[in-house]
Length: 320
Image (tube, rainbow, N blue to C red; front, side, top):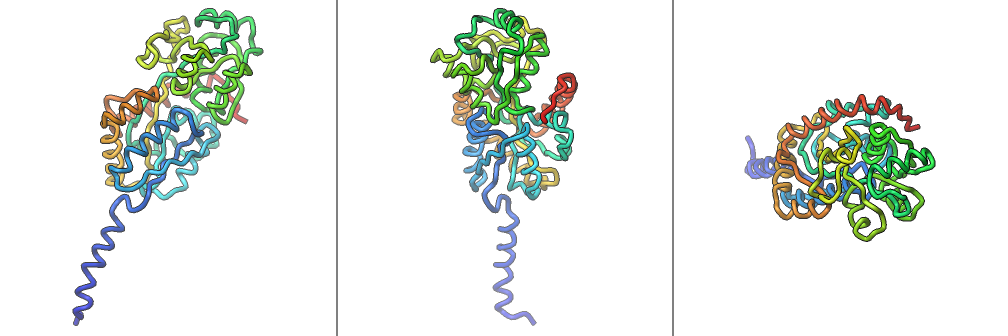
């Protein structure tokens, strides 16, 4: 017959098991697959800060950069599918399987969309010594310089690398794309005059434009952007069909319990709806999405993969 001690212990054990099952039961690791200081890193840290109090556990950013986000993506896929490791994907996510066919994971099947986080235009800038005041003048100058002109980009598959490749393809001009481990380093070399041009985030470039350290010529979106309304779009300036928006999507691993995904999605939705968070994102040159839901995030990823796969195939990229 059970003793009184057993009866007293049973509720305690049940409560203990319930506490262990409750999500999250420990800090959450947010893998950011790019280097520190870029716009995706900034967005990830804003998101982590704002989700932490809503989840009742710290969300800890961890930058794991390299090979067009595939290094960070593989580190994410090695973690348990329990929601305690999440991943902030960006445009790289749509092209990494095409650029790196040996990448062992499917960008749709192996990643569960949690939330559509933020978006930004890119900005085309040149060093002040480049004799071009607008996009037509730049394209004319590039046609005379050819591969002697240097464009700074992160490693193959990085968003600003793809922006440069798209410019070469759409404008029919030549320049040498110089790879860097981090986009911030390429921007520093444009400022120093070691590179002539780049296309990168307004977070890094707008302060440099205001200080006269680089010259802004255009934004990357199909139309003008509220982030830099004084700049024309590349399409408006004569590069037909040019349109690239940088985006961030929060993912969980395939196999993560649906109730855990729902908890993460709800925390992200509430965080992104907070006016203070929206203000922080706007200060970083970011815009929100009207619909941040997992369904909207999944639809964006699928559309971007369909859009970029043939473009990347035509570029004949060789990441080495």
